[in-house]
Structure formats: structure tokens, C-alpha cells
Image (cartoon, rainbow, N blue to C red; front, side):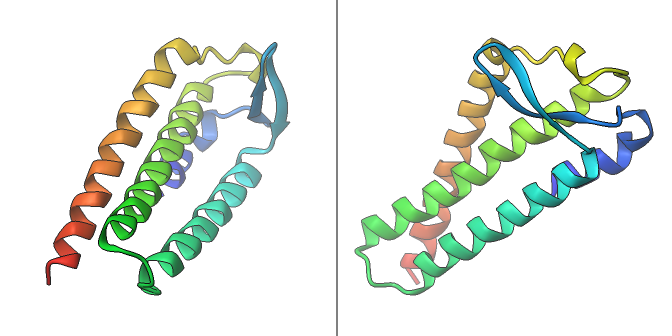
Length: 131
């Protein structure tokens, strides 16, 4: 939901299209900012439903339960960072091809956030498992 908040904050300064995919040769996919927000929210909801189902069915060991929770939290927060940071980076651009979003900077940040989210998810699952 952080992406939605950033979108609302910068929507007046976004280009008509934003980068939706980056390939090995740079940005190669574009769409309207609102469409990107809608697609990513739908993706988050689908992931929440999948990980939620896996967590509530409780047919796994405690370790598997913590792993599923860690993967869910880690994936959600890591993706959220990339999408939110790229939206913020688009603000003020007239052409999305001018996006300066170096993966050498944002990749390690996203990985760190993903790992922190995974640790949080595992800790929350461990606490829930102890009840």
C-alpha cells in the first residue's frame, strides 16, 4: 500500500507512462501509472491470498510454517520497495526513458528489506506457533 500512497503524493508530477519492466538493455515496458498501481495491488492481493491459504491450512511442520511466513513477508516487502522507489524516481520526468534507477543501488536495498521482512515474518510465525 506504500506504492498507492507514493502514487497519490506524486501523481501530478508523473509522466503519462512509467516504466513497468526493465530488461537487460534498460527500460522496455511502459504503462500508465494508475494501471501499474492497479496491477500491483491485484498482485499483492493474490500473493496475500496464496500465502494466507498456505499459513491457515496448517498441514505443515512448524519450520515449514515459519518458512512460508518468511517468504510471504520477504517477497511482499521486497517487491513493495522496488515499486515504491521506482514511482518516486519517476516524479518530475517528462519521458520515462530518462528514469535513473540503478540496480546496483536499489538491488542491495531491496534484498536487505526482503531479508528483514523474512525475519519479521518468521518471528511473527514463531510467536503465533508458540500460542
